[in-house]
Length: 296
Image 1 (tube, rainbow, N blue to C red):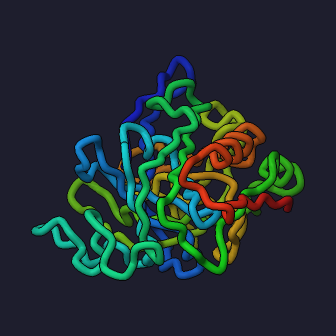
Image 2: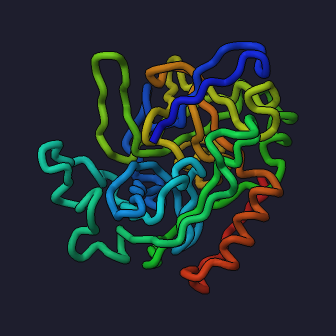
Image 3: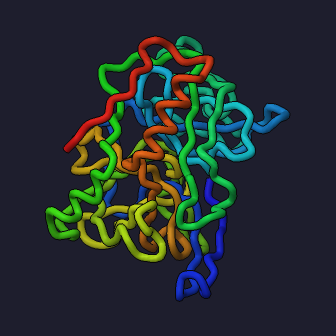
């Protein structure tokens, strides 16, 4: 899912085009390191497939994604195969191997595929209040997915502390998602596979970030960015082996997925408090749904 948002020049001092982000681009590789990162599809009030995003399990039943992915959706289904939609046929509009985006293939429900009728939005409303867009959402799965490991949340203020301790250009992040890998006026590439790529921190406190968003640059040698379909996917602090989530992919600046990337930070007290309170009050959650928070 990727919306088009025009940020007012009078507010930002510049004219920019921001779009909810999609897939991993540039110097990407297949992601087998993060089995808890899933391809989530959403359905409207009539049960019709609406759009897809990415996200990550924080526990067997708690799936973290972007708020703009949750907006206007009434139910969801999540696939955790690395190649969840790789066999998608445009003619049938279906991946006959996994069932994407209509059903969970036989034998996968509750193992590597799950459904949900319990969706929560942190308060995202079409980028109102920018840069504090509240672009976080939760999907509480009906069937717990048991995995050896899950994503963990970085403690409040982690990014601020890191930025103070070392030069920004040395701070590495890894994004993971199922979005587009190339987008331009004449060509679009979508593998519908879980891919990952590294990027570098560029800003935490300008008009586009202001402590709420993480700005990274995925352009250049040995780096990758995000594009349509990567929205909601985790941004890990560190290289490809990290499980520590500091943000979720939110939007990109400039067209065709070639600009800088912006992710909504999850390492704030307000976001963490909302996640914990929402999980505690949700009806589908299980006793095993304990969210892990780590201090780096």
